[in-house]
Length: 293
Ligand code: 5RP
Image 1 (cartoon, helix red, strand yellow):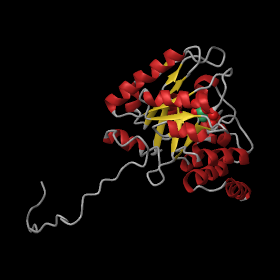
Image 2 (tube, helix red, strand yellow):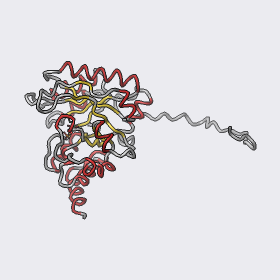
Image 3 (cartoon, rainbow, N blue to C red):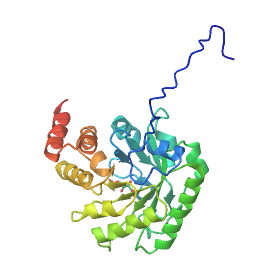
Image 4 (cartoon, rainbow, N blue to C red):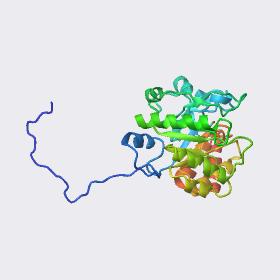
């Protein structure tokens, strides 16, 4: 019990100071409950409202992808530069140090490998295990227009229900089948469906034309996947364009861990995302870090 001896009987209620109420700088997120917002603040930097998610979950259907053969060797040294790590529970438990104290976005759908029809996924993580792992969000793949479209949407809505029960954000990951047009019309459809059906935020691909309409039509934050490895200047340009057109960050994998200099690349991406650094400058920064050895 607190010692009350010598307690000073004077109080200051700051009567002239209205109570501050700090909103979360994320669109469409201010009606969420405190726990959900607190988790989002572990994914998106509260100062910029943006995030650099480092995506290393590719093994859940692709096996040991180039650059991810030994996550302990290649990825753990990059964790310090990311806002968030996106991975599977297998990698989290086996390889990621428990001292990592930023948000983890947990891959929560899966099933088929690259050898099969990949849209035939199921929910692959129980919400109880996500809570046990203390993650900041769960991620589910949604295959709009894919063979198992309805199953994947149903996976998403079930995770949204479970997430709402426990204050766990759900990231809807829009997956584009090989035969589908990767254009703004498709991305507007897929991202808007994820948001309407309850996702807290949505991951999509950047499209060259009219990406701003994709971001505008999605009422919750959008982050872009990096996609296949490109030259560093092109990946930085893509990240810059996406941010300038309304994305709240990147969820980038191969363009970071398959770069010639992954640590330099993630730091350059971070400056594009959080500081609006233009691609040319960011590329020079990348080169400087890369050569400083
Ligand atoms: C795998 C994923 C990846 O997290 C996503 O594609 C981001 O990685 P990359 O930047 O390499 O595309 O969802 O299915």
